[in-house]
Image (cartoon, rainbow, N blue to C red; front, side):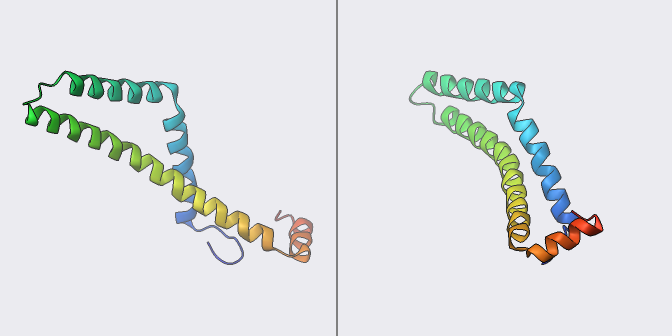
Length: 108
């Protein structure tokens, strides 16, 4: 994004991906799926024999994979929020003259 608040293609992509990530992560079926997976991992861990190191390690890896999967979406959400915050900051610092000029020229 430049000093005038013009978004680059990367900025537009970041905002678009953030919107997609939010839609996915807020989808009730996705929320339900994550809850079911987490519950399944927890229950499997609880029933794993105490001497089953390999079993617990496998469940730990499954949990880490799920967290990484979620992390990809969370990263997109955060990146989009940063771009939006930068854009908002630029908009707030524009002078009244700039806003009036943009309004008159139809760029608002």
